Length: 102
Image 1 (cartoon, one colour):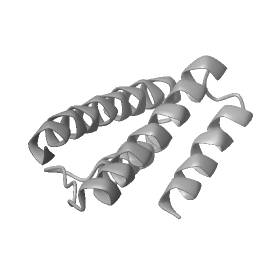
Image 2 (cartoon, helix red, strand yellow):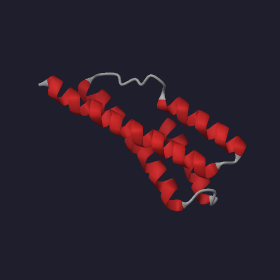
Image 3 (tube, rainbow, N blue to C red):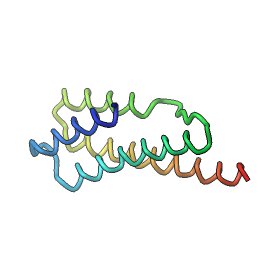
């Protein structure tokens, strides 16, 4: 349910025109990809992927803080960077686990 709620919040910012469409869609897609890669790693390797700081918690803090400041473009840039980092970090974990499993 966290993916759906994050998607709804991000989509609301995009639909109300508070952020550019390409940046909003990129952020939304990367958030979904990062969480799906994590879920797939947990399912395939039966291993809990835990980051030092929960990416969901970090996304919520960024959403709240920058919404209060009304800095929507900066918020989406940070969310895009965080989601892109999480995506590639988890892909790297999956790559190394695939060789370790053999």
